[in-house]
Length: 308
Image 1 (cartoon, rainbow, N blue to C red):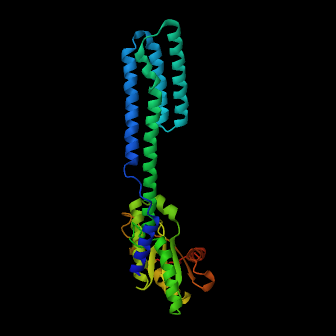
Image 2: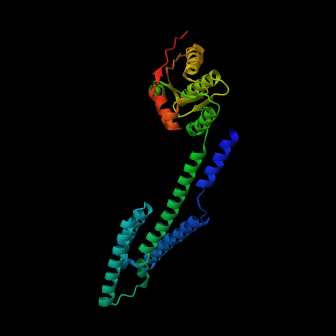
Image 3: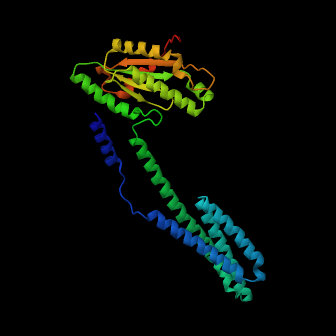
């Protein structure tokens, strides 16, 4: 069984493995963008240093507009930044051409402003592109890792994905050997209330204790799964509904043990009400593991526990 599961996981890795891309594409784009932004600021500094006091107001206006363009581009509002940079450059050139035509303007340092807006916008565009590429890569990695995880981090039990895979295997086994299988779902009744009252560590402690009770109650050939993060368990039983009733009886007795939750909340006793649903697989389900789980959940009923 473990070998089959390992092969499925390896096949999943090969299937989902993305095509190889140049390793430094994002880094090169980021570095080029940084160089362009830096060059733009250098040119702006040259224009400010060598333009003279006569162009003080003009330079102040250009600095303010360039700062706005840089902020828009940095926050990925690239279209607005591009339009503003284009308008800034065109107006600056129009004013400068008019000055040259009327008064013979000779302050060449101020022409650095022609290149500053374009360099800033282009630089931040490359930086944003590199960041977006990195974010997408991280999303793909996180998604692939999530798809490969088959155990619950709190209880260490196999999770829902693993349960769906194993249901198919168990159905095949049962059909070959003319046996029956059932799916049992166990769930705390007041999960939201529990989370509101208990600390996260205390809630996790309760989930771990419940998982141990379930694992200790079922037989070795039965399989227990932590199918969500809210203390819900799935159990694949290699028996019919009559056999599942025996499991339910044993679970009822253990859930009624006062010592089960002792010490979870210091100086306070707590009781967790559990719900249970069970369904026996039949051919009409056509190996549909999801449907099997839905039917078991629809059958959820409160376990009547006699707390001794």
